[in-house]
Length: 159
Image 1 (tube, helix red, strand yellow):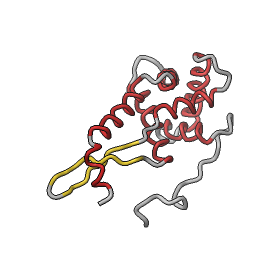
Image 2 (tube, rainbow, N blue to C red):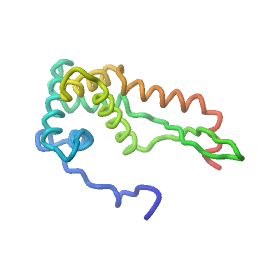
Image 3 (cartoon, rainbow, N blue to C red):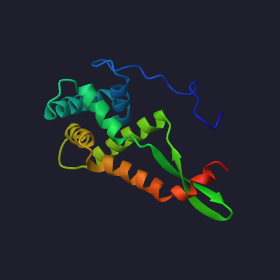
Image 4 (cartoon, one colour):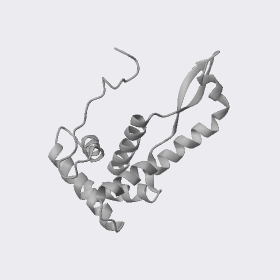
């Protein structure tokens, strides 16, 4: 088993039924709890349609794409032991991991909200991500800030 995820090991995700979008299907899969895919599907469709309506857009998939693009991180820090000391070393993030982090941050931020249904919480988080605010965007900013603070240790990445 290789250490890195090669393209042959990645599952092929089929597009969703309503918008024929792989991005929407991946969000449905990340939102799903206990194998209840239809419930997750209803919530995600309601959320992206509500977000598009709030932002006065005709295409809900474009709203989701822009929200995901706004919170996709470019760098992450990994811990590495060099000469008896642990350093947080910044690394650039590959495309599929950017998407994974962005979706997980949206879903976890939506689940952390309270006082309304999951669809409404997800909708609010998508609108916040679109407008570059909210918990998921803050998570990206924190990730970038950490990478920037530890930029002096970047030369350890090549060693």
